[in-house]
Length: 73
Image (tube, rainbow, N blue to C red; front, side, top):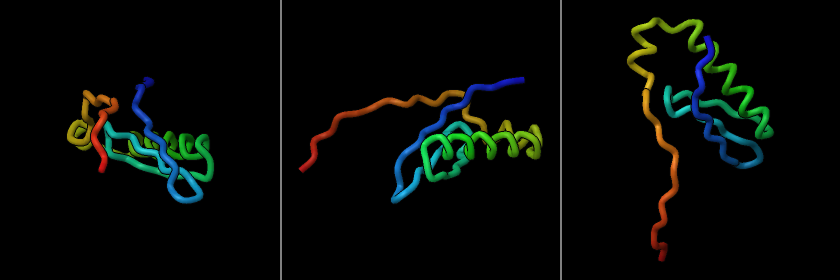
């Protein structure tokens, strides 16, 4: 079974941090693609080892990624 999850990737220092907000699982890499692949691996390992109860507890069914505009200064 395949499941689509959100991957948020941002630069941090000389590398990239990737986050899946649905499960609050993060990883990192030296490139965007490496960070994405490392997150994918971390998620697959989580689903292989977590109990159904843990998955249900951690999985947020609805996650919205958007932008807001705020005054600065």
